[in-house]
Figure 1 (cartoon, rainbow, N blue to C red):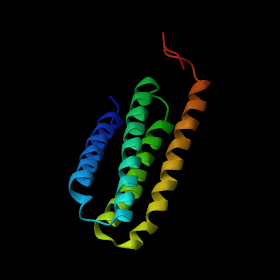
Figure 2 (spheres, rainbow, N blue to C red):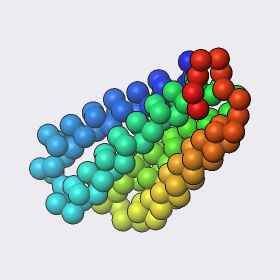
Figure 3 (cartoon, one colour):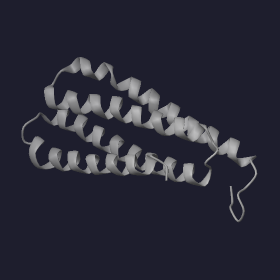
Amino acid sequence: MSVFVPLGSLSALLGVALGAFGAHILKARISPDLFAVYQTAVLYHLVHALGLILVGLLCQVHPGNRLLPRAGWTLLAGTALFSGSLYLLAMTGVRWLGAITPLGGVAFLAGWGLVAAAALVTRGAPQAPGGKS
């Protein structure tokens, strides 16, 4: 099994927990604009947790594709940088943390680009017996 299925699942678990923490505890303690920042962090965290699971499943179907693991690590880095910086910004109010966020966004774009490239490379590769590309 690919490492990205459990990593994505744990990331989703953490995203749900942080979302619940935000909705039930943090919302009353921070300003509405910082809460909106926090909600953005949760949304991107959860979307990219599902992306990690997808990459993990694709790694199982196409084990020889070297772009897929790179995509998974890049999406994970994007989650840490993008959502992580926004979580910290929302909880601390330290605005310079927002300068880190675009690095995570670039990692997200690169990760999804690698998924697309992997799909294009796989499209021309021989199929596994009984499999479809």
